[in-house]
Amino acid sequence: MIVVEDMRMMRLIEDEDIHVKIDNDDEEMKMTKEICKGFPIQIKLVVGYALTSKKTKSFLQPKFEGLARLKGIVFVAIDQNKSLSEQGPFDIVLHKLTGKDWRHDLEDYRKTHPEVTVLDPPDAILHLHNRQLMMQAVADLNLSDTYGKVNVPRQLVIKKDSSSIPFVVTKEGLNLPLVAKPLIADGTAKSHELSLAYDQYSLQKLEPPLVLQEFVNHGGVMFKVFIVGEAIKVVRRFSLPNVSKRELSRTAGVFRFPRVSCAVASADDADLDPSVAELPPRPLLEKLARGLRRRLGLRLFNLDMIREYGTRDKYYVIDINYFPGYGKMPEYEHIFTDFLLSLIDGKYNDRLATGG
Image 1 (cartoon, helix red, strand yellow):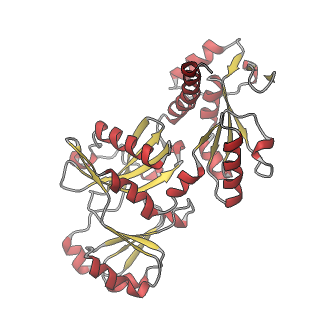
Image 2 (cartoon, rainbow, N blue to C red):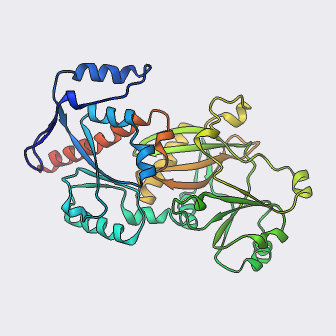
Image 3 (tube, one colour):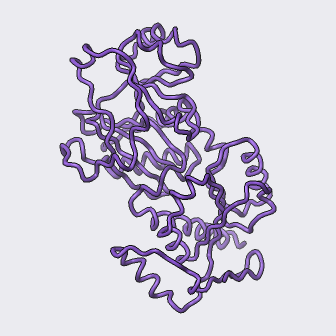
């Protein structure tokens, strides 16, 4: 039973109402529940969420929601048929919806409820809906230090007229093969599809608007870099294999692929060449994440990152996704709940510092 005395007073939840699915190997969660047993849990945080049904199912898994409640975090579904201002109170609004009506409602809500943390600002998210803009944010960092160099593959934006693609590619000096991706990355299945074009003639078969990137051999392994506030988690995923000069000379056409990287394509337990499997240096990732958080104005995103085959320190970011599938990230339950609590702790400390 949740007791709300008013918008900002203590909220409690009785332990008997908590039904948590606990894995046998999750000792920390067992211990937390044992400590809390018989005591009312203070509700520290109410998170309103506006997600698609598919996203809700993958993100709000029973173990995650149960751990969150043990830590004093409650998730409340936002009714998309009502104005946000009519709902709540919320401490945080977590969302991943598209559409102008939702964006306008959320922006109005942010203006009238500055005390609520919105993850993340709608205008900042829009930046990642355009692959040209998202890659420019990485290029502008010009990140290079003793741990390595991070850049983006050479790329070209084609907005219309597929018949002109071979000419433009030749003019710009891009090398085959080329990876073709939709220019708009709006989270739909189609926006995650890609094609690999092996010859100039076949480029005419591509459908603008799109981004063409030079394919960089990377040993068939991609690094998924999950970012949750200041926390970083990296996993390996299988990717497209290397393309040799011999293969390039003997192959023609456009080969289409569905989403290349997913949880079932995990390479973390595979027997890989150590030079391919080695994760990017932690200091490099921290510097990259910090720079992109600042430039993008986002706290929830991930990077698709590759290391050029045959090098130790030459990395490329090939895609960025807002609010990715955190349910596929190891230990996401603890990482995400700690992040949410840190937001409230930060606000409390800010109020103390300002005497508010």
